[in-house]
Length: 94
Image (cartoon, rainbow, N blue to C red; front, top):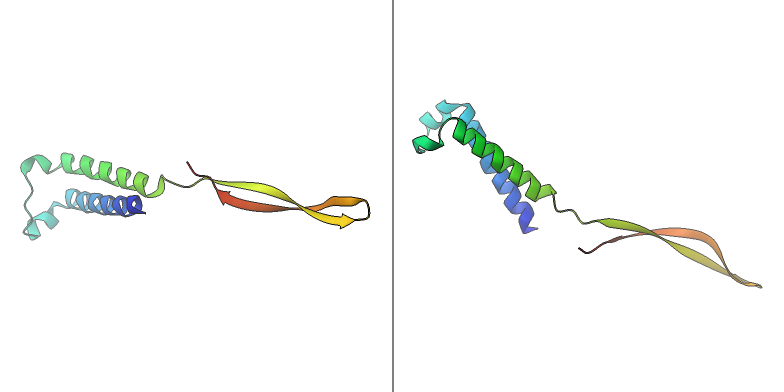
């Protein structure tokens, strides 16, 4: 769960950086000052990396599910016999 939150925060920071690098007038209108090395293409590249990292953290860690067919038995004079199968889903632990 914490990985998802960190991923969302990184993606939001990356989107904000991408917005600032695409529209430099936003940075001029705010009191936020960035070092010269972070402006321009460096900010855009860093923002894209943050967005990709955030998406990987948010959606990359999925639990694997496996379906298993469980037989349903019915008792008759000859003994037990299978009458149907029921599918059950459970999460595999890594």
